[in-house]
Image 1: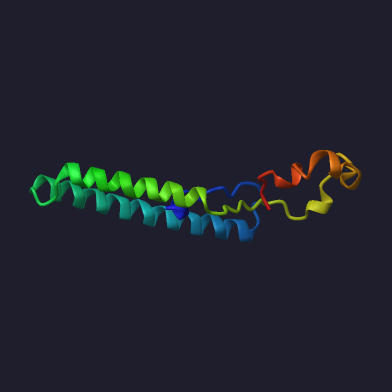
Image 2: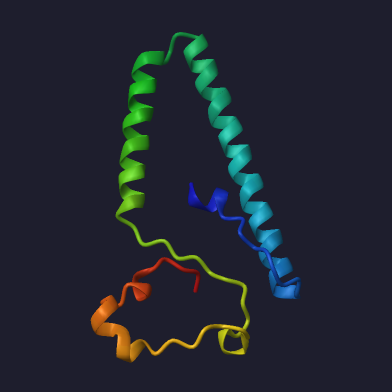
Length: 114
């Protein structure tokens, strides 16, 4: 579950960031509680003979592989905490227009936070 692992809120400590942090903590806590409950239920069903461990494990692996494939085909957006990118200092001045024939816009294809 992507929401359970989305805890990349470093940087600014303003009210909006604190609210995002609190919301992330709530989501992570809810995910953990759900995981513990599902795990306990699975263990109990296997112990009572109501769930075959081998078939459960095979199904879990199939679902995991499908999810990994789905994530590979999905766009993932990372959001940076930089308030205004135009106020950043010390950045190199690059004449992209004159280099576009050489680089074929490689740097524009890099994965980076928005």
